[in-house]
Image (cartoon, rainbow, N blue to C red; front, side, top):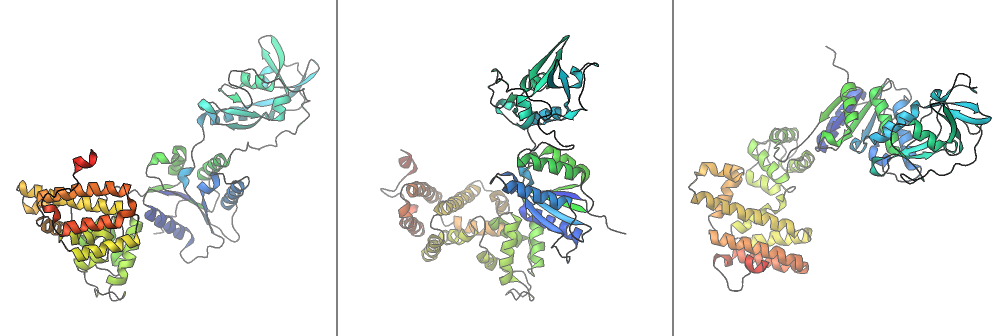
Length: 499
């Protein structure tokens, strides 16, 4: 059975950038083939670069290049892929501006002669006896429509709108007015005119000009707005009716649907496909880690996968990079690793982990838990040398570790069965076992004093950052030598620190 052809328009979005990128590449390969040359058949753009306004012509050239790439078939290509990243930056234009523009687009005017004066008029203002000079023309009175203060759009008039004369009929009375008064009467939406204060009098019109003066807009011409509005309108058209052969791949780094333009999202679901890749804080991609490790010739069980996520976090890009490094050490025979294709030892695996949520600082909690002064100081010196300004991270990790050991004492006091400790601590059983062994080396009062000392240390480092090294060394020395096991004269207490 033939496989279903890929849809012409797709959107991949989410906070899991690794999965979004992988899905976009896979879709591009499905359209063009993995081995196909991409010289003519693939182009990639960034929406934020088009709309952020770098200069007078930079946005227009990028937007034009994107439009040409989408609407013009490349040389000798029957299908091609155009990728647009950062689609979440393309927002729906102001609804009031949209409504006003629709009204202006539907406004048609005729050139007439009223009481010897050249003027413009709509069908509603003309009588059968009025002489018309030519057919109806699109209005060319407004140069731009922009969002204004108080959600009231602001119009900028063209020379025709500023200087022209317009016929208005009110009951049996007919009169000629300027462009501002004409638009105020003909448009239902509220608006302001550039250069006119809200509620203030209209600026006096310039001398009237003949309707013949000024070139009328060419048929099919559309009003030009800022790059963001042009890009939005272009995407609406491309998503609704993509040119034959075009495959439009859109990506967005949005965590919620509400971060993406809802009308565009609705069009995408009708015309193409939408896939999201969202990672929540409690997401643990254990099976994904095991599969990715297997692809790198590393044999992992669920326990090691959980440990990896615990230290590296659940971001797939970070996990993938960490597995790439670990494959150099623990890859199987084909990778030349030391494990020979077997499951790595937990101790070796932990020592090799380095990224993410303080994984590189894990050994210092181990050394302090065993009161190993030499080992703890060696790790501290390395930390100070490599990341001299990251001491808040170290204090946070140490404080968390002390609180976990206090939690262990609470479980012992409540006589909770040890089989339930790992679940209560929300730790991997391997880590929970090590933590329990460390907690038993400290008394509750000692742990409380250490926690208070950490709070005082954090306060001192904010005031005396130049003393980071000496203060941290003094703290490590105090923990390993058991100086917090008894109240010490002159030691800072939390109440004293806050006083």
